[in-house]
Image (cartoon, rainbow over all chains, first blue to last red; front, side):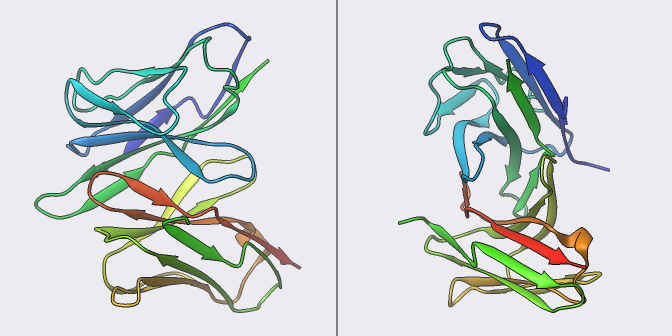
Length: 113
Length: 107
């Protein structure tokens, strides 16, 4: 079955270390997205990519980096420059043609200690 | 103003009650999504709607495109339905999310 796989589900890191969250889709979707959720708050856009080798900053891109070298993969790196990295991270993907389709990953809960 | 508004923000129900969560949006959409998030857990996609109504077990989702409104209904609610329910809309090049409805079902 097609879908989005985020791994791992829970991740712990020491302060000051970079960490990369994985997002893989086998849906042949062109667009992929990363969102962040803080306790009691809604999801906010970090980065998105409409096509391979291209990506755009979202509302809260500072302290994060992404790459889109393959259509299937959109990894998110949380750098040491991110002041408050502990959060829930959600990956999503969409296709517009031939019919609209959108899928969400299960999410990764990152805790920095 | 948020592009997606959900109500109520919090909801407590007795087991067996019929539950309705509402979602209104202000942008043109490709589709509307209902997501479920258990405390400390991940996201589960419940429905994707672009028109009409969908049913899955005890869950029913409806959408009225003209009124820009969707409802999620849970029939015969159960304590395992306790979770945060999030409404999201996809517009073609991004998503907008509601802040969620926290549901607690008491045995």
